[in-house]
Image (cartoon, rainbow, N blue to C red; front, side, top):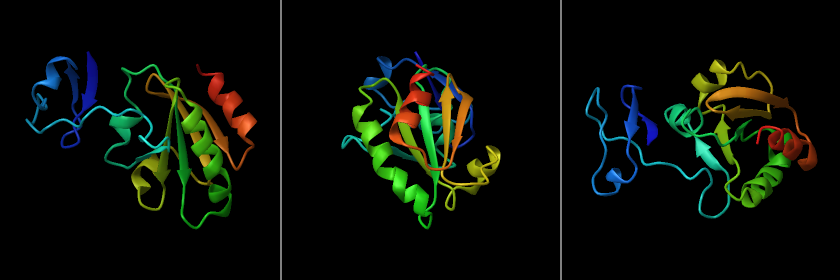
Length: 152
């Protein structure tokens, strides 16, 4: 069983993943089609992009015990561009132990405001649907990896 959050109404829906292979699951409240489960990283080993609309389903899914590191960034931010290759490496090295996601704060102000992001880059670490750690500013790969490993 997995929990999928409806992108239309925000309702949490329990979905039997085996049964959903045959047919598209729908929201029990509004009847909208539920989003497909996410793997955490794209097939090319890059971090997964998340938005205001997908954040709850992709990051705050309490049914997943995997830690999720969210990079809050912006296109114009120099330090954000400096740590992007580090996050790409961590995503490629994850081996299914954790997820890496990227949230563009300029395009997704609701989520940025929800987590009080005032400086970028800000790295948020979630576990079991809860924010458990926060790293502000560019950090070396070893420091980021150590904070992420502490949540596994």
